[in-house]
Length: 135
Image (cartoon, rainbow, N blue to C red):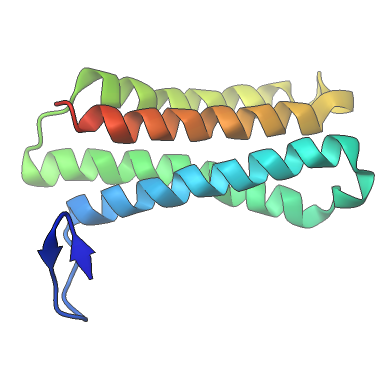
């Protein structure tokens, strides 16, 4: 396995920092997939299947897991946090809350809501990942 230019032996343990960095890609990709799926389901009713909502739930729970991993990393390793990185991370949690709170009001547009919301969360994840490199 290669991590930031380092070579590792198979079976060696990942650090909390590596888990946080790798999980960021899961957050980004999962929200991209469910965002695109929900947008497609807006126009194609055959894509409106229960699996979409299960996948959306997993992608959105990933936001909370990622923030938890980041906080644990700060506590364990004494990492000094870039303010913008924290802003994007916690904005992801707020975005999940906003999506959930508007689901009834926008029931007729819920696929658009969750599609655009998933892509927005994906964008926050990308921004948080790359802003950290500037700290």
